[in-house]
Length: 203
Image (cartoon, rainbow, N blue to C red; front, top):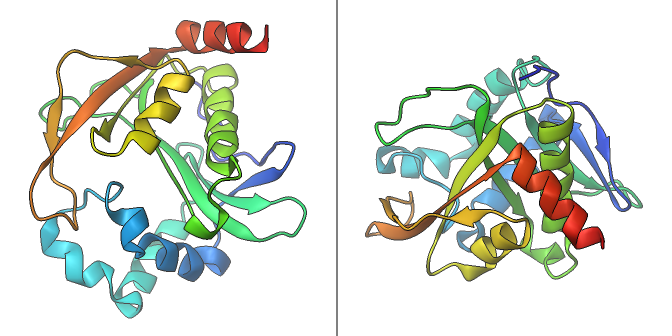
């Protein structure tokens, strides 16, 4: 793969930019919305209360932002092109195997969330597609592996729309703010599969 970092990406309605400290409080407040973090956060439960404290999280974000433009970081804040309003975040990170070990930097995981106030406009789809286009075409990654809670069809329907293949095997996942582990569908898509699916969709 090519390590090109979080290059600015524009779509018809959105601009994806490398993260800055300026929008982190807003993004944190969106992430603390139960409707957003319910099926998104998988940080160890021992950090659950700390995550809710901006004063503690601010220091974490300050350290993270120091590396926002490093060539091996692929994490963007999503802005509306028309107004400049930040509405969410997308990322593409190294994938892990069953033992949570990173075994191939060209096999990536993905994640995204959009402020619920802007749901229903297709912004999540648009941002996710722009990010995956960049990762497959310019960064030349080989594959994306990801998952989604079975009881969260809004997430896995998007993956299937993009051409992801659902594996027969599911996985039990502990989400940070859910009391019990949740069963997740597991998905993958290769670069060739993704690009071929885009061709079919355009026809």
